Length: 216
Ligand code: AP5
Image (tube, rainbow, N blue to C red; front, side):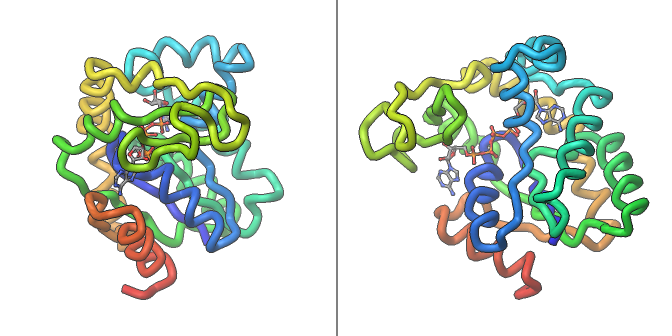
């Protein structure tokens, strides 16, 4: 099963991708996570991407497309994957379509996370992440077992650079301008499934399972 999660920053794509990867036994492929790993490791890609990410803008297509296509060519993606945060521009969607067509492995479904933008700020400013990349929590909606510490390694949780309010506004503007047109792109192809991303996490998970397994 090859699935795309499409939605604005903070709509719950990462949270739900982690759940779906367990129930469907296919990996979550997050370009945000891949880029943050490159930044942590100080690679040439990471050094170039960091400025765009910290400012809340999109990383240029030429950097992200190669990164993504290389990742989904790895063996654990041979039976499917969940794309979390890719594509984010029409150029990325076209490059993905072309690459998957060449492999005769088209996208099966696109899940569109619908949510009132006013709710996103609350979700993002309360998010806390493990500096080692072990996961993320929310101070109110999904607190860690020990306050302020990673459930996996115990490190002190931090706030992402781009989760400050001014950066969140820039990310939302990038979504509106560059990513929202993909809703029409995938609806036209008959692949889009809308979910109510404002619902509680369990309820959103149920809608997604139904959408990707043909339950609605
Ligand atoms: P990325 O990491 O992909 O960030 P994003 O799309 O902005 O998504 P987020 O991770 O912020 O939100 P999410 O939808 O995953 O929500 P989450 O589940 O965490 O990208 C970061 C940057 O990398 C971009 O700005 C860009 O610079 C660059 N980049 C990445 N991909 C790119 C691409 N393809 N092209 C160009 N540049 C790219 O949930 C948020 C919070 O809400 C959490 O705390 C969670 O606990 C809570 N929550 C989730 N669901 C619920 C619920 N149902 N109820 C209550 N709380 C909830």
